[in-house]
Amino acid sequence: MTCRKIDGKAVALAVREEIAVRVAQLKEKGVTPGLAVILVGNDPASEIYVRNKGVACEKAGMRSETVRLPEDTSQEALEAEIERLNRDDGIDGILVQLPLPRHLDERRALNAIRPEKDADGFHLLNAGKLLEGEETVVPCTPKGCMRLLESAGVEMTGKEAVVIGRSNIVGKPMALLLMNAGCTVTVCHSKTRDLAGHTRRADILVAAVGKPGFVTKDMVKPGAVVLDVGINRVDGKVCGDVAYDEVAEVASAMTPVPGGVGPMTIAMLLQNTLEAAEKRA
Ligand code: NAD
Image 1 (spheres, rainbow, N blue to C red):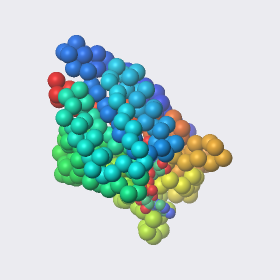
Image 2: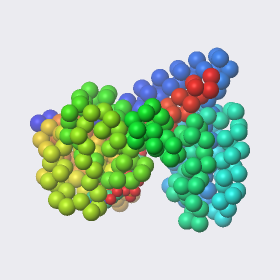
Image 3: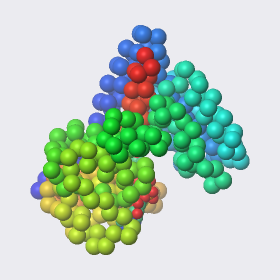
Image 4: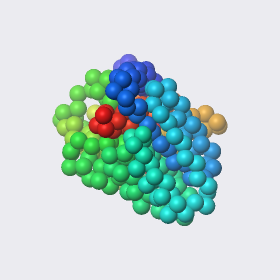
């Protein structure tokens, strides 16, 4: 079987071009979408992510603000900063870069963001709306995965979908989105018995584990569509959770790493911010 590469880089580029057009239209009405990113401490990986988000915003014509707070910032000081941005009419999206230093309460900080400005979709109210199947701000990575499935023309109704990973930011919202799209969904995790027995039933398989080469050929049903969310570093090189070359022998379509889900995450962050600005306008 020939495996089609789902080119996340190309889809993300098209989404970002479309966003830039909509941003320009909003600006004509006097509204410039704005995203604020709060970075606490000096984690090098977070520094890179935050810089990339700022650059992406500016390229799309949006306003970007990065708030840098010291490692020893108190919960109160962090929430005061969030509240300042909640009240800033020029800011449509607020994102707290995770992970936060251990002394800070992540859940409290995320819930301090006004739900309409919750660019990451991590506020409990937005998570609850997703659970109910209501329209809401959807977390960027699973939203990007859904967009990739749509752009690849994958029919979802009635399909068996298996998600490996149950985190609040990827696995769980991914499972809900697939369920809302009409799939029969199984969520696997570190305590799952006979993992391959589950994954081999999947027409759509999503790997969000964080272990390089975790999904092997024997775990994949012939003809399955495989989305690789993992970002791992091996000998300085970025790779996903799926052993790409061998799985490509059986899958019908698959996202590469890099160049698959990753670029979609930033594109969806811009889209969430734009949609909030459109509501403001
Ligand atoms: P996480 O560590 O919170 O969750 C990992 C999940 O994998 C857990 O639910 C755990 O139960 C499951 N797991 C671990 N070992 C397992 C096993 N042996 N069998 C079955 N399940 C097992 O991670 P996360 O935040 O959900 O991220 C997952 C991966 O996706 C990471 O590599 C992360 O870097 C990447 N990620 C990528 C993007 C992107 O933009 N592409 C965004 C977020 C996360």
